[in-house]
Length: 105
Image 1 (tube, rainbow, N blue to C red):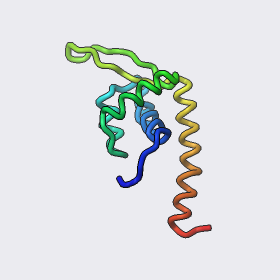
Image 2: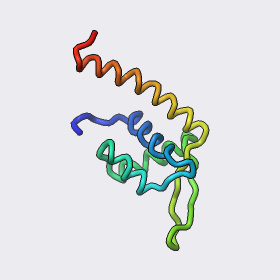
Image 3: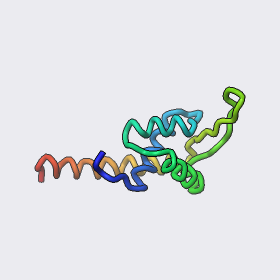
Image 4: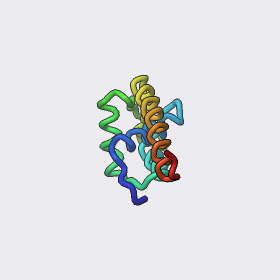
């Protein structure tokens, strides 16, 4: 993709991906799902996950999988509220950009 992805958009995408599973999801799967929308490296994604955890948007817990611990991420109530805000803002933003591209006033 030729458009740069800002921090807020990346946060919104990560929260949307995590929100898909009520039990939470793990880092590698988050990376794979985010890559369906934008190209992102794990070295970019994990600081985003840590920041969202620090901002109380994500709850983090470990779960046993194949004899190893796997770190899972789940939305907190604050994360759900932040995602709703991002969704609302995206609707307005994307409509304005689409109107510009289509020549609408």
